[in-house]
Image (cartoon, rainbow, N blue to C red; front, side):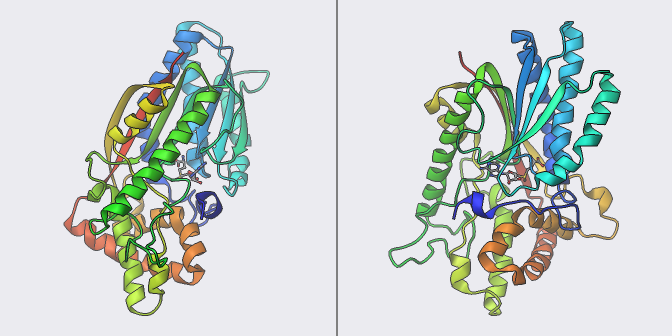
Length: 368
Ligand SMILES: C[S@@+](CC[C@H](N)C(=O)[O-])C[C@H]1O[C@@H](n2cnc3c(N)ncnc32)[C@H](O)[C@@H]1O
């Protein structure tokens, strides 16, 4: 099943929505900001464009979508002033999959434009034009040479699909009792995930290389790992605990074992070496800088946690992201129970371990 058919962040602004449960991703945008700012300064200094094409890939819905754009606009305005050049018109494209809740993003656009006009004081209206471009970033989305800056945060770890070759000759799942790479996964599962990542990331680079002007930048921020070992807990333990929650339901007859064995997350947390290898092979981009950041599983949520446990907060974050996929595969009837169990398992885990997410930030420039 392709990701495009099964993945969307929880819609709206209710208790389980992505909008209300995306403070970890907000923190990740914050750590990515310096790289984004540097890229914008380089673009302005080197080409002083009259019109700047900008895309945020995997924008989702909720406060993060327009926060990214508003920070980019601020940096462009501030640096145009410093360079004493006219502020370029900003043609901003928000991209996500077709089923993304773009309506919630559009609802907040009037207040975004109003703030922009008030802060930037442009009597003729905004110099920033926002539109939505639905579709998969594993393929072409924009006209040739129309973009100066591509930004993507917390999205590129989603594969276009889970690897297809995770079954034996009788159609039985090879990654028994697991839903992602795990310490107990056979080597063929690790290899299949790596191959899927290589194919997808290569297609991503080829597509963007057509769309970005020479000297344009991509700032990509995604879940990853620092070790070469794809079974290291920092990159897969959140899935390990989710598999444990599902497994406990299998043992009580609440979930079918073969259902669990046939579910594989379309996700891959690469290390920087794996990314660099594909970038070199594709050849259109040069790596400018990269950095790995440790992010707490409950980052930024401390203030909300008066009576809510860390386990519950982490479970809400993960639910807002993966509920659509689990519902599609297992049915909606298991969702509340699986996340109740997951919250307990996360709470127990965090009381004994300091496992963190590793977030990779990589900045690339398009060669001439
Ligand atoms: C965790 S959200 C991140 C949203 C936002 N960038 C943020 O930082 O809060 C990941 C987003 O990537 C989107 N996504 C995943 N695969 C995609 C693809 N192939 N093309 C476009 N968007 C994709 C998902 O639909 C989801 O909205």
